[in-house]
Amino acid sequence: MQHDNFDERDCLRRIEQGDEVAARELLRHFHPFVLKLVRAHLPRRLSEEDLVQMIFIKIFHKLNQYRGRMPLQHWISRIAVNTCFNALKAEKIRPEWRLGDFSEEIAAGIEKLATTTVETATTDDCDHAKKLVNELIVQLSPEDRLIITLLHLEEKSVEEIHALTGWSRSVIKVRAFRARAKMKKMLNQREALAVA
Image 1 (spheres, rainbow, N blue to C red):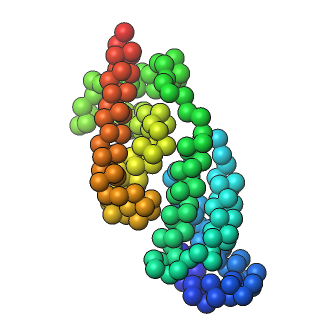
Image 2 (cartoon, rainbow, N blue to C red):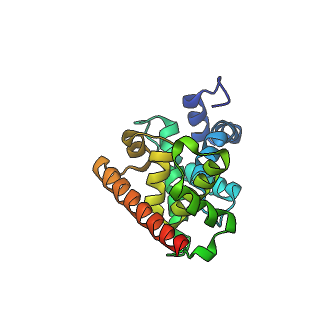
Image 3 (cartoon, rainbow, N blue to C red):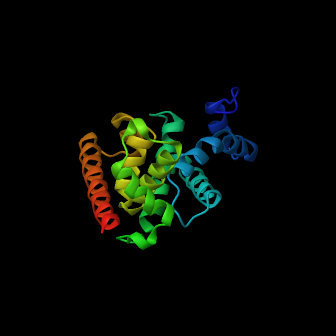
């Protein structure tokens, strides 16, 4: 957090009493944290600032429900991740992609990745791989996309994902396994298209 002298308990007490300055302090303190979460889970069709505003509206609306059983940052992160998740879910995602939907650069990258070993990969190969992973992730359901992003791209533990989403640990593991299998299947289909 950016403000080391932020007194969370005092700020919450003052907000409860209707202190608008305290509300601005809370917003200023947690804005970078919420913005980081939004950038990690941003739906394609929403601006990050719109989503951040929606999250803070929910935070202030539900602040009277915060009981202090968990750190405020965890409570806020759960609201932020769930808001992003709901926005992703509401977004209409194309169920499939054709090779023609990719740029020539990415299509060539798919073919090259199929024949490139890790030891000989160039910076361009790594960039193509990142683009391809992002293209595959976009095709997943919002739930699967969230799990893959949190678990593999952000390298969060199952326990951290449980704290953020409220999903059970077994659901997280099963969903991650199935999402990886879907991505592998999509990649195999694309490789077949690239060779054809």
